[in-house]
Length: 379
Image 1 (spheres, rainbow, N blue to C red):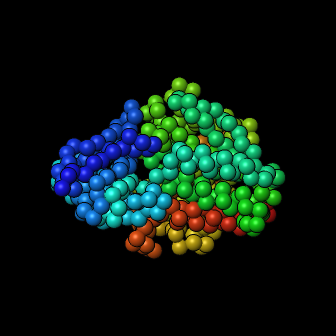
Image 2 (image 1 turned 120 degrees about the vertical axis):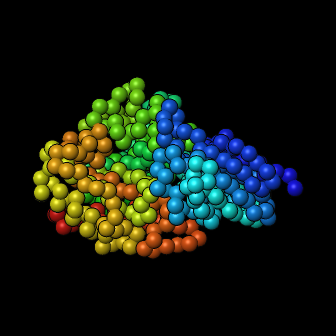
């Protein structure tokens, strides 16, 4: 039979083909633009119907997060709508660390990705649909280095300023799936959670902070090679116009509550990270964050507090990171939400693992937790 064909010259596509023999391929992940990071892959295999594909992604020991590969199954779709999982195994001793993906498609084309992709076309659909909803205004915050717009959607009649922003790291597509779920809640006039938040808050949502990295198929950086979540202390128009535009607009609106939405490569659960270690830390300020964390933990089994990042020591917070900068700059209750690439071991779903659908449901739980948190604090 003829060799399969592998392509990645499309929105967020990213793979290097080393060799193809029949239905077996050796592959490698190119580095991000002007950067040493590499982890995101997204490619199409054609000529595949009824054949067991054996796809070997090599040289992963020097990827950005080698701990992300053990116990990880690649995402796969034959219609680009439903994303399941393909059985995968990692051998750190094979060709510099190799992830072997095995899958037999029913149809002639199959797509593989590190997580279910969120295309720029879908992003524009999301923004347009939300902007057309009653009570929603669209603000153009600025442009990226590639000339793409930085979109902000705003709604609500309250004085409590809530900022929700996602995909500073473009390969963490979980974050924009979360945003889609959040916007479905917030733009639905019949949704009780959305209705309460629109009454009490002024909401500002940036569904994609890094359009350039998203389109280019990067894991962590923009067109200049900047990791946006290390640019918040001194952003510049030349290196990080995305952060500069968002932070400048935050200065105009103020921030009372903020959630920066991400994905984590290695930890197979959802968790929050706070702002311990900022110069202005107080126990009362910190308790605002911890009380929200407790509410979310109680509301959903798809969130937990046992596993997460090490807390910064007093005075040692990195103010170049968004959550720390926003908490310090505005006195806001700020946090980073992390979702897994791997399945949630405490509540596994073998067919899809952690999925777009679960990202969207977690968004609703986060917003419902915010309503409860505001109730507790009399806001």
